[in-house]
Length: 266
Image (cartoon, rainbow, N blue to C red; front, side, top):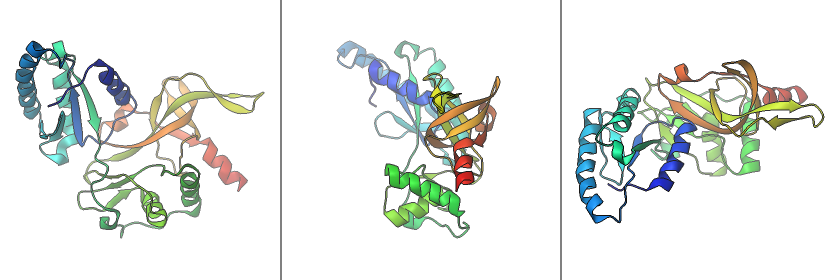
């Protein structure tokens, strides 16, 4: 198993804070000096110990690099938190300052393999908004989510656009009994009357569940719920996430100001 030094670990920490992925795999990083022969001898034993620790909590070594995968894929949402806590709190591993990054498989099948028979045609306004974003930015707003039987769960417009334009699209699998959510990640903004635009209040990023009817794209300004009441945020990133605990740790977007303004003006 390959581990990395501090500079890569810090990058991983930032990624973890920006949103929870699908938990298809976890990557474990230990902080040690790979050029130190004596230290390397001890690390080999610690890695074997790490493998055993992970297996006790429902995951196993994948055989590749520093990647671990769930023993039972369907229960990964229930076990991922336990295995991460076990790794980061283990007394024996603490001297290596273990860091864990969740990751997502994005190429689980080909587009033509997806079953879309249960899908209905999207509203023209929603399709047009996602299509316009793709044509302007040459990337889709978000990927496709299928279940274990290759049936479409979310991202039908991305599917249609990928077919029409032949563009790359991430295809992710989430078991049918695991809830799926869309998260909008961004920073707080406030409206500046003189400039008649929204100004960032800070560089801090936060995330909210987005389940509104209107299509959401990067750059939209939303009204969201916070601990201090309602506030404005601007979307920097949109990700899909899964798991029953998501609803408990995220507040919701209340209104998409940008999308509603576009509908009113059209």
